[in-house]
Amino acid sequence: MSDKSQLLSQLKKELLELTHMGSSLAILEWDRQVNMPPGGSSARAQTLAYLAGLWHRKLTSPELFELAGDLMIEMNQGRLTSKEACIVRETWRDLEKARKLPVDFVEELVKTTSEANDVWAEAKKTSDFKKFQPYLEKIVELKRKEASFLGFTRSPYDALLDGYESGMTSDDISIVFQELKDFLIPFIQKIGNSKAQINPEVIKGNFPIHEQEKFTKLVAERIGYDFRTGRLDISSHPFSTSFHPTDARITTRYDEHDLFYSLGSVIHEAGHAMYEQGLLAEHFGTPLAESRSLGIHESQSRVWENLIGKSRPFWKYFYPQLQKAFPKPFLKLSFEDFYQAINYVTPSFVRTEADEVTYNLHVILRFEIEKELIEGSIEVADLPQIWNGKIKEYFGLEVPNDRLGVLQDTHWSDGSFGYFPTYTLGNLYSAQYYDAAKRNIPKLEKELARGEFKLFRDWLRKHIHVHGKLYSADELVRKATGEPLTSKYWTDYIKKKYSEIYAL
Ligand code: MG
Image 1 (tube, helix red, strand yellow):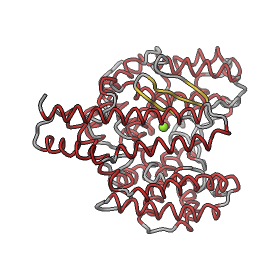
Image 2 (cartoon, rainbow, N blue to C red):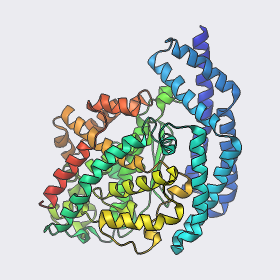
Image 3 (cartoon, rainbow, N blue to C red):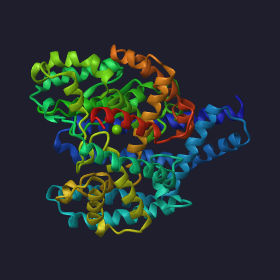
Image 4 (cartoon, rainbow, N blue to C red):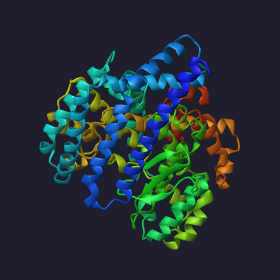
């Protein structure tokens, strides 16, 4: 074996061990949220912390750094194939990042955010921002410090954003988000002034949980979520997790009065999990079998949840089955009234309950605020006022309390600054991908209306899933759609769909 292939197989061996540790951690985390009795929480936290420590020690070991460094030389001298280079480049990136953060800093951040998360939950219950404020101030200070450890050129926010959407800067995002905002604010007002009579209550009813379980499972299976390599469980917040392409799981929560909560979340999480199931097992343990970024991941969930799951073709196929499974209230409800009700648009306070049109404005607002917080141009103490001002400006609503305002999301208490924009990036990518798929497969929507989802799933697999981290997010979207990321496809999609529904 040449020197190069020896180094490479050594690196793959090390990475595989790290991945095994990561999968074990993820299984414990899945178990914590799905099965664990409440009394087990503090013991589990210790087990998770111990394993995370082992994982971090291995990741930052001098041996691994030296090995990756030797391979970087091979790469820079052009002696690696593109796949080998992907493994080396992505590993180097992770190692460099991990090594920039001092151990005592990481420990302080973990300790602060885990305390802050509990305080935030309490503060949210009682709508008491003052209680959370000192903790958030501490977190913001630590995140600014983290940005300076990691390094940045323009904004410290970019250093944090890079942890979720590598290659993207806040300047890139600001441009796209401004375009979106310019479209959305007047468009939402137009919808509000429309004379269309849409009653969102017609899809409310009593939906026995076991019937919901049957129906959501049927839908997930039909769209291509493979239950031989997946499973569906219950947790308080829906999520998806994966330990290997042959074991990618999802969860949901059932509400007897709201079938569309479980259904929407199952389709969303199945979209995430199908991405994981579509990664190539032969590359397991390397970046070639890892998802590209959070934004790309979210595009996979959103495309199924919204562009497919709230579309006419999808429901042309599923509505008769829905009527059969839940004669009340659907048997006597016309398809049109049903379709309009599931696509009802209204300004609201809470992001996670927002419809697909208003959703992105919620994200834009958070991006604007967290960027300025990290850059130091606004202060934590002023957040409620700033938040409420933006809700008034964007939606015309008066926020009644901080529980429905600045305290609603867990992200900042976790220290997850830079995460929010990936939700909207996911939406934009999803529309751009869907449009490209329609161009590539002219009969696509006819197929969807016949309940045939394989063509579309295979398209996503071929253009996104199988590549892992081989390409950057930018290269990935250019290769699949012929263009860099643009807000145009999402905006066109929304304009067309909702102009029809609301007779604009
Ligand atoms: Mg998601």
